[in-house]
Image 1 (cartoon, one colour):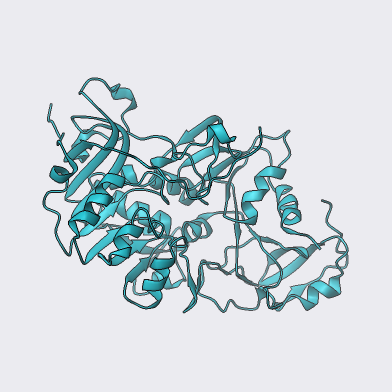
Image 2: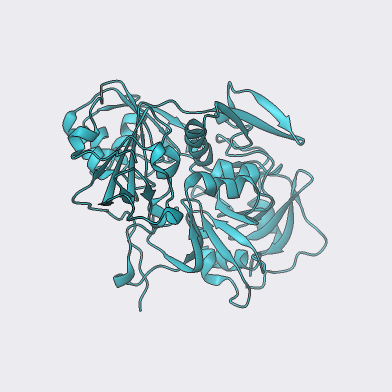
Length: 232
Length: 217
């Protein structure tokens, strides 16, 4: 057994530097690595590139890094819920690469799986395809997309063991599993960190080989963007 | 003329037994409420659930269970969760039967624009480019004209495209139309709406068959 457990978020984020590229799991505010994000705000690392489906909201998630102007470039698929983001983008303070969500996921998965590039129909004939190689397969045009290259991946899982095996919960899974092992260093925070052997190997979503550091997270806020309910 | 709920009700009639369906944000989300309950249908949300159920009651709200519109939802019996890559594998691999999404503009050749107004509004394409790039059956739910009264059914899209030659059907507050051979073919009129009114509100080329029945909602 190889133990990946570290004792604090400080230890987990060791080596983080200005100018690096980070992957961050989550969809909206669901399944975001809250502890790691808060620590990045505190460390005040600058000029970072973030690969994340969304950009948080003004006062939570990646919005906290945006507010402090720590982000140089965002690579996302949808950024509609963040006024500060839109302001920085339209004023060109922030570079933004908007890419199709499936392409974003697959570029992570490709990095994780050692596939340098792939072809997808998503974005053909649109500005997303500009400058990219186009090839026909089965009579249909596809564009070539490449695997991401990132320094750190920040992941949030539900449960994990000290060997880095992970289980995700509900739709908080989203981009988290596909970013594991897609960067040079994968840092995972979990709601419940257990001893090896306590998780049933049949129900592991991501094996520990994709994880370098895992730590017990704290004080999860799990903010809800759109609280929609029905009557009993 | 239909309201948003009317559009959702009409589109719900397009959902057939055994379909896996992806619903976009806005009017499409409402479609789930009006699907016949004597058929088997599963709703996919691209953030990673198949078997999406209705909104939760207050005590069942779970921050770890949302749809692509970031709304809290529930999971139905037989539901499953998966990661984003597998979710788009389902979409790209054409395992999802029907995609329903909103649009800012649709062109008569089936092009669609729904993610960006240069210099003004950029929300991003989310999963829309993947959906329209692969889905076999794409229905657009939208108003026939914009707030300024200009047609959204055009000869050519003026906004940055989301996808090319991909839309199959459009349901608006005025009509149901199909894309056939580079034209909008008028299939049905909304209750109380004349063919003349639809012609006037459609900038793209409109093919009007000899008979255009009124929708049954």
